[in-house]
Image (cartoon, rainbow, N blue to C red; front, top):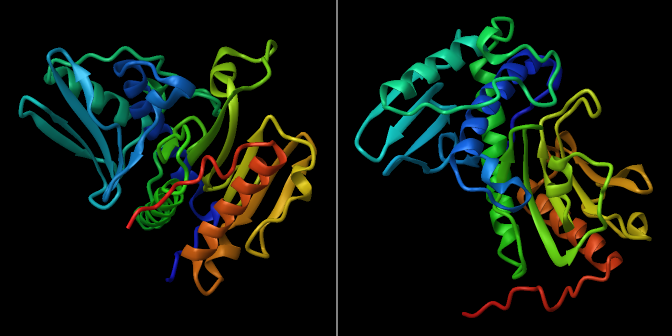
Length: 299
């Protein structure tokens, strides 16, 4: 398996534009679908061609928005037979916002979103952001190939757990593909945190996922964290050998750099081993009933 290189600095401008495209689409989903725990109603999902909102209610029907990274266009489909699309190349964030708003209005859909980027700098409102307009189709396709590969491994990983578990989904606020497993126990309250964080971390969770890099870790990486962090977490073994613990005690993350993974003979098995070792590290240190939560397979 030959996974593509994705050096952050080579496509940072395109990533920043794509991140805002995803936030526009994600905010529409968040406002359209019923609330779910831990903000699961706000996320996007990997498809064979890109990222989708899935079906969202609209009047007596439903609609879907997809970012197509193979055709390089944004597509909208409705249950009453309407469909339309526009290209993503040579499009600013403002252009994407207004094209999508007008397209949806033509279908009788008028979403009401806070049209400002979340946790991104600068916070130029989407309707006036003509600065972010880079779109390198080669790197977008590379990113999507990695998303598709990562999603497939996450789906396989999910099959070994019978407890409460999130889908494999993309959180558009940080542009990371993630899956969370839950012990079923409430986590300590976070009285000083904002309401977004309190909802996200209301219960004990072990999360695994992929991000494409940012200013904190300027390279693509796979990661895991356990919340709340149990004593002894950092003494637990990780696999493969290239995986390591980052951060500090109390804010630890298991990391497997993407370039280290793609250099291995079998990236699929190595990534599955990484996710499993991260889960077992958090579950064993945190006193989860590991065997009770393991899937029983029937053949």
